[in-house]
Length: 225
Image 1 (tube, one colour):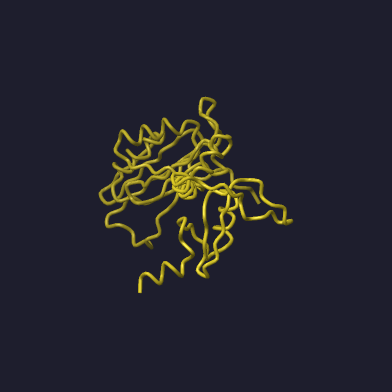
Image 2: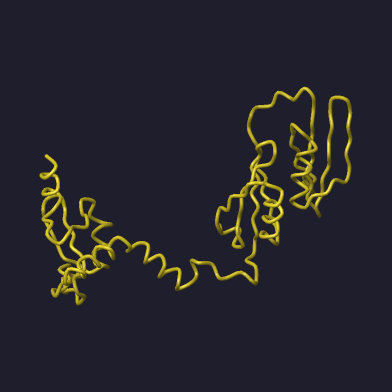
């Protein structure tokens, strides 16, 4: 059996002129076309890639299942700028493993989803945020934001002189100073450093950040009776 050597993506469109204009924004160029009284087609090419736009009147009765095309490009920012200038809404979807240079999503005039990815990071682009020490610090700042606000409130009231009351897994006392108070619905409280406070909030569903004089969630609920 002869293996497939090439493929042409075909999509039926409502307006062949607006569809052609959209795909030309992605670098395709019309190489051949034809029109009749009740139909039209446009063959667009870019290198080895081909898209065939087809139009019929009345429209074909096709199940409403929009297509999805995935295109790779070598300069995503240039493509995004061209789409933006034409008024096309562009949604950035991040940097998936198959597109370290970035990925965006747009819709063509017929509602088909077009994903565009850059397979390699641009030489001029800054390192990915997840690869930098600054990003780790920024992530830590986000995770600890509420804890730091609570610790700042305690510090404004004079701070704590006692150490963190949460021991290490082996029972070794934590050497860090207590900065924030945590409590649970049973009324148990503990003063903890920020690192241990985060561990508690993640692993103990009933735990919460308490004010300095708050004995626990039970006290809070009793005041709402």
